Picture 1: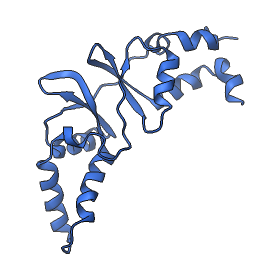
Picture 2 (picture 1 turned 30 degrees about the horizontal axis):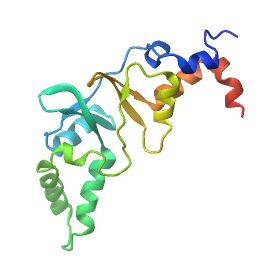
Picture 3 (picture 1 turned 30 degrees about the vertical axis):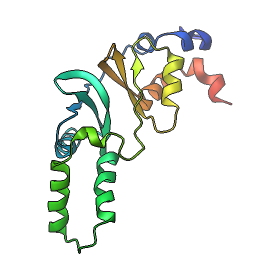
Picture 4 (picture 1 turned 45 degrees about the vertical axis):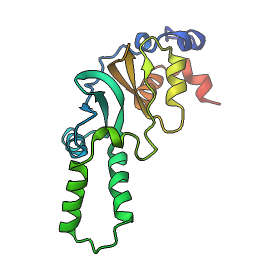
Length: 173
């Protein structure tokens, strides 16, 4: 067994100790920013979600917003829109809707982007518990209320794949 972990010990260890890789850049946006700014940021960075921060406290996480939230908001409007929609009309309405809506009001608009922060002292088992719940694909890791890192289901899968000797028996079930 080449892994320094046993399954029992691993589940009790703090996540940041077992997964010390350099954290990815955290992309965030102010809770009061226009949703159009969020959409632009997501597109420019080529990412799917942003951490929403409290106004004037740039690292205090309030929630998440992603492409599905923005799309759901726009489509919700057009479901009840009776006029003929041309491409030009759609673009104008789309931009106006997102320019006049604050990011904070669209957090989890889709109902598919649940927000559950994880304390920096959380164990590997606690991280697995949070990320295995329906609707939670990523979670901010907080030190007090400050977001210090974002953890994703992909991070956990990367860790597991690099320690298959520890997880092998469980994965065979």
